[in-house]
Length: 120
Image (cartoon, rainbow, N blue to C red; front, side, top):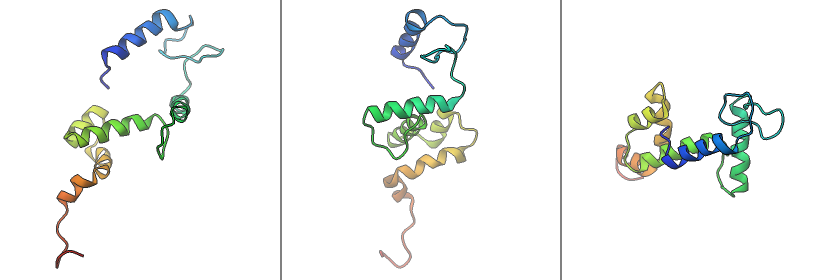
């Protein structure tokens, strides 16, 4: 994902000034000993879920995937194509990206064929 300049600068500052010294080559490490990188993506998802709850975010699912989903649906609402969204999210198949199309019901209604025999 493209990284805004401010985020890149914040990460560089963290690595230079805020991150405790340790042998791990991972960017983010555990806050408590042992100071090692996170074991897997589940740990990141747990941290994100807790942060979303603390921030009062109301969503049916709370996890790191919420950020990808929000980005994709916002891009779709602003006119990006599914191919563009899939490329940004690095989906192997356009079929994977089509899940985001269902979130834009207004756009989908324009594609629907009229009901045979008139309005029902």
